[in-house]
Amino acid sequence: MPLLRGALDAGGAAAPLPAPHGQEPGARSGPGRRAAAGARRARARRDRDRRARVGRTRRRGHRRAGLDTGEPGWTPASRSSALESDRHHRIEGTPSSSIGAVHPPERPIFEAFPALRGRLPWVALGEWPTPVQPLAPALRAIAPHAEAWVKRDDLSSPVYGGNKVRTLEVLFAEALEAGARRVWSTGAFGTNHGTAALLHAPRVGLRAGLVLFPQPRSACAAENLRVMLAAEDAEVQLLPHWSALPGAMGWVRLRRRAERPFVMVPGGATPRGALGYVSAALELALQVAEGALPAPRKLFLGVGSTCTTAGLLLGLRLAARRGIGFLAPPEVVAVRVTPWPVTAAWRIAALARRASELLHRLSGDPRALVDEATLRAGLRVDGGELGRGYGHPTRRGREAIRRFGALEGLTLDTTYSGKAAAGMLRALRAGLREPALFWSTKSTAPLPAVGDAPPPQALARAWLAGAPRRDAAGARS
Ligand SMILES: Cc1ncc(COP(=O)(O)O)c(C=O)c1O
Image (cartoon, rainbow, N blue to C red; front, side, top):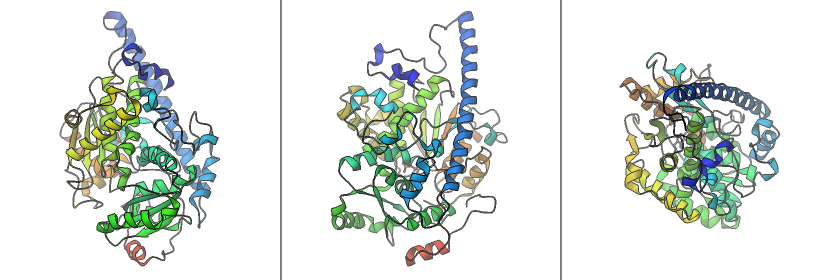
């Protein structure tokens, strides 16, 4: 990644840009082009091997992390310190003593916009860049010639991975700057955002609070809820219905003001939260420029609160503007997991535009500004996999989970990533032949073992009593 720092230099035009995918500087014709193409293929092969090795090492690290944390009555802090000593947990290039500091760690967004240093607080939580891998083993039976890849954000941290780690790197920093001592997550019973916040908060000296409302039952949601309820130093408020959420957020701000609460909206969907995925898009563009994968023309992911999609939409456009990885951004195919209007295209584009304005304000760089129409042109919202609604499993989602399970360590869930994968499979079956990328967003890190004891809260007890479990093979319902 540092090799490409020049490409991201704020100087932009003056800096030596890496060639967009498919072009090699100085090799545009004749034998030079053939030699360069050969070198490029060899480089891509080497890179793939290296990344496969990284993936194996991380999986070993995840398994070991799971073994470290089996005891009941755990606290997020004890789990974190157990993991802190694991060498796979350390953040590359970041001394472990700096974990928790509000400072800009090495993230592509700071290389693209150096003026952000000192103006955009950021904490290091995850392990970046996450690997990319060919999806071929999952697609053999249905699209053997497809050029499809997966971005393994599920491996973003052995503490708890998935997409929300990137959002929390920015939001926790904002909370620390504001002097908060407890960060409150809001979401459904099985919230991944809340689980990630609970498990990562102690690593930066914060406590966690959760305001949760019921959702359709699933094994993944139940596993997360058990972990959240069992954490000793977390405060959990359970609501009978999502409509009580605004009132509950107000109550927390008022009644817990001594702790200077930092209350996050569901999914952390604010312009600042979206900046985590602006940086992720630049990370992907750099991987393309390095030859780790071909430039995708379509990128598939699940859209719930819109934070992840909005950040990617903006980041991909900013990368293309600078000719990093690709000259035209891949189309973002956001597969709906929550209904309209929450996931309306105009809402996603508006959040991306607001993130772009924030980036402009903080960096002073006019190249950060992207208008809403341009952003919207790069987005397609696919409502074909929602089924009966948020959290309701679908047949096609289950089929996608089974097929994607052919990749070692890739376990999708029925609420988010299974539906997104089903959207990608549908596009492939319909004849998609352009390079495509699946963004894997559900953590595959093992959760702390918390046992089966029923929780004291009646609402949670009744909900958990009817929840399905993983089957013997580990598949989740
Ligand atoms: C596993 C997973 N994938 C995708 C999403 C969707 O991301 P967003 O809420 O940013 O739209 C979420 C949201 O919580 C998630 O937990």
